[in-house]
Image (tube, rainbow, N blue to C red; front, side, top):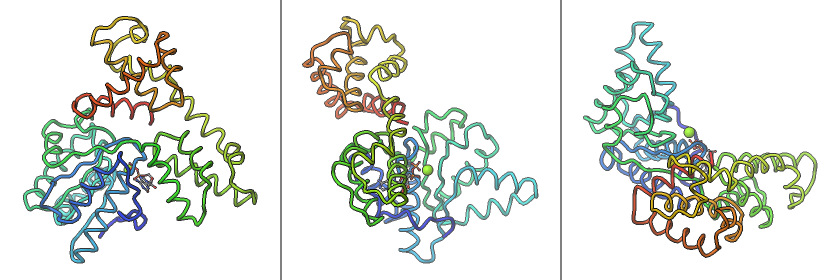
Length: 339
Ligand code: ADP
Ligand code: MG
């Protein structure tokens, strides 16, 4: 195996609603590479565990099949190695190398955007691997159809197997991740402290981990106990940044932009579906992503009643279950607001 990082395994990946599909798909593929989904493509914004799952799948495959040639590679590296090969006139060796692996794990394919020659080369590698049923797992930082500058034929091929999104972790998952990471450091965090961090840091696992690391490092250095007061002191700036990003006002702006309407329409009394639905989405996001109460949210949406907000939340929640397009809109807005 090449390029695999020992630290990333299935066993230390914390599961939650936001990542269980991606996890299950990666596990399934790792169990029978080349046969179930090919390629498997995991997408989601930064810090949500894509690279972790990629390595975990590779590790699993390598351990189950000691002879398997498993290769992890960042798309950037693929590009730079190809350029070098071209320069040294060794492109054939380059091709052979990538086409001889049993499993290719290629990270952050959005990096191919606008790099035509690399796409061309990858297209052929990709086809050769698929034809001989070698497994390919890819990651991308957004829905691949949305990456500008990637050729249509390549984009369509990315979707031939299974494409799964990985979402920002919900509160329970954030708590579980913090507890697990603290335990790995042989530290027990009080619920107060865990909840404080999990409530305020909503965007991604990397930031969550970063906050915890800096808290632990500071506490060890100063000999202080990690309680709520100390946590607030150490993480003050980090938490402030997070709070600033996710305000009701900003949610309204982002939602209005997304649906190409004005914030004033969201706050207005108009009830046509084309306005009411985005308004409900914005209310739902405000409930999900901020600490504000229903009455406060209602108030911020042109002085509406809290029952209106409650109704909006239930509506969007049920639509997210039945309507794939709305679910994707919700996922995209969440990503935009939290990353
Ligand atoms: P991405 O590739 O999506 O940007 P990474 O895989 O690099 O994100 O994850 C960022 C950090 O968060 C890594 O240290 C990773 O181990 C950790 N991480 C992400 N998701 C989880 C999870 N569900 N359980 C445990 N650790 C996680
Ligand atoms: Mg990554």
